[in-house]
Image (cartoon, rainbow, N blue to C red; front, top):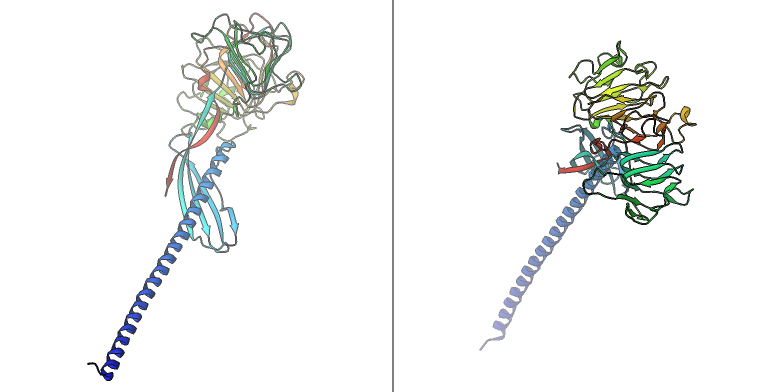
Length: 477
């Protein structure tokens, strides 16, 4: 039998054990709670760090996107930012980026090294998070030129009889002024309309005529595709034995740009001319461009931009009636024959297309390419001169007149602005390789002895349009 004294002693011992157990459990729970708080705090810190690093990555990507947009704006010489660009600035943080643009392995490639920085708080002077990426961009075209391509209007004057072309593409509209005018083509695509003449994609008094023979194997009808109404009847908006017509097609993808920078085809192996522009004005009627064959000294006078007053006479080169053998791609910082119209002959001794980039305007009385010449693309950067307004209502940065006869099936004329053929006479058929520009105005003499026929075999696919810089490779550093 347990005595009262023994019971009290046993009860006291049990209370002590319970207190120890409670204390142990309390300590254990405290440790667990502290560990949970510590883990939660660490996770929160890591999450904040990841968000901050992600913000820095987004800032870097914004910098790369900005650089691509700048290159696409026409600034092919863009080298990057000169200081940090702020894209977000709130009290808790500030996000910025820097970009360096360097040449790639090929002339149409740029390497963008973009760094995004996040400052927390916004007043901090040292970035808390930083991310650098490297983006490789390349410039390529989404399409190529057509026999006739216009970013706006293609107008055929009343004196013209026939215009023959394989493919015609026009952003705005086509208008023909006289009912005896015929446009003969295999494919005609028009993306806009003439709002002042019945909202017609194709309109006027002229006629659409299918070719007597097609270059495209298997094709038997002319394809007419318009965003709005084809107001020339026949065929109007209806297909028939001669035409496949798709009218009122809504949005047709347009030509965004016909600008082709000389750097697209002339890399850093091309050199400045050692004699300025004297290759073009030396004695004799035959001129080799460059004068030292194989030298690639074809920046006249150098690789800068705009017309140079040191080239020719105050930036105007008079070519006269000379012959110019184009043996490589050329960048010419001058106007051609603006003071006095000239009648040059061009010759490409190879089968490879050669590009002649002219920073100014071109004023030809007539132009020839020698029989057997390889293809030549004349790229004209100049603006529409006001002096031609009365005879070239849609601009004439590239002008072809009516003194003598033109026979240049190996020559394609592509201008950033207007192309104007003013009462031009043609001595052969085909007469020219093709034309392209902001506006095309044709007022050629009918049948003297030939109408205007675009050479359907000119390699227009090698003349890029809609050139765009695109990211092709992404790397986090």
